[in-house]
Amino acid sequence: MKYALITGGSRGIGRAISLRLAEEGIAVIINYLSNKEAAEETLKLIKAKGGQGELLPFDISNADSICQALDEWNNRHQEEYISILVNNAGIRSDNLMIFMEDQQWNSVLGTTLTGFFYTTRHLLKNMIVNRYGRIINMTSLSGIKGLPGQTNYSAAKAALIGATKALAQEVAPRKITVNAIAPGFIDTDMTKDLDETTLKKLIPAGRFGKPEEVAELVAFLASEKSSYITGEVISINGGLYT
Ligand code: NAP
Image (cartoon, rainbow, N blue to C red; front, side, top):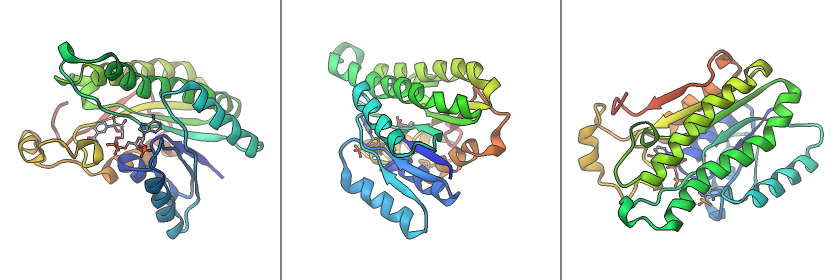
């Protein structure tokens, strides 16, 4: 049995990824922070289609919380390991730099970067021992292009791209691939406060993307078929910026 951990796997893009990987016969471990109802709904949808999954709540911005949850999972699955990691959880807290508060800077960098570092380091050991792994990091158009009002978010997502490229080179000899996906505007709770009517005029495809479209790309990068792709950043943005 293959196991995949999807951080922030309970809602939005993460939910679509959890459902799509479960369709591949992968047992999905759905991480979330506090919205238990949404996480249970995701698990219910997976089970209704005959898939396998479990919930694993922890705070991705807190190193102790991550390590405790992953140690407990390992204790319960001594003969198995998580071979697919999707570092998907993320938050926005937009503000112009001049008004940005410490908490806005720290929470956005903490969620994206602390989460990536501790979760990936924890799971990497077993991937290396087993000489197989897939790591997929959810970055953003904002991390490539930079978006005004998002110095915190753009900085975090750009740092994740750098980490993706560095780690890919470290672990390629062990048959572990590390790639990043950079979505543009995707229709989720994260973008529901945006002015979609105005923004979609800027998108050559003329619409926001769907979480399922991102999940399809994750499914490919998580599969054995993508074995020679590593250290890449793949945009999925309807032609908004390349
Ligand atoms: P979303 O709908 O807001 O869902 C966020 C998910 O992350 C939820 O499952 C949430 O759990 C979880 N989460 C947040 N903080 C967490 C924490 N501290 N610990 C554990 N889980 C946490 O977001 P989304 O739009 O699907 O975005 C998913 C990823 O794609 C993010 O990294 C985002 O930056 C990136 N992205 C999104 C877009 C877009 O247009 N939507 C574009 C580019 C990149 P709870 O339900 O418990 O809160």
